[in-house]
Length: 123
Image (cartoon, rainbow, N blue to C red; front, side, top):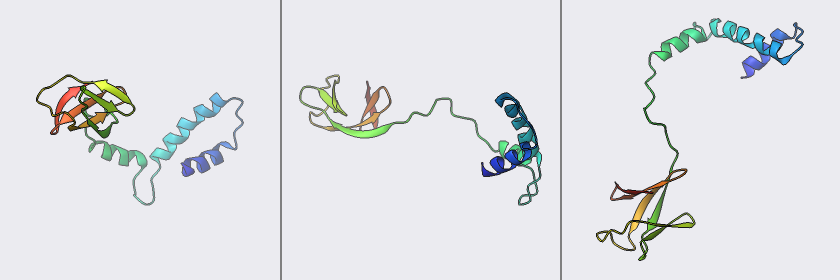
């Protein structure tokens, strides 16, 4: 960023711009010149290096990444669990031990409950 800031402003000081749009039109021209300029350290331009690295890129996964956090919750005798400060009713399962600790994976709008690392319910 420092390179662009220093060089771009130095290059455009000789021009008179009457609007921000005129200045914005000049910026892609500068970037094209910068990306095709040979770098001393690498002996290649930024564009050449990008084209080489582009071949090594992998495809993005088909599903979007979701930020989540993990928390433990206990099943209360009335088949409720406390998620953060809220109580949520869960389906009654006679095989699940009351007061057992379950792992919760909290998303922005829902959560998954896991038992022995297997998905048990999604609310």
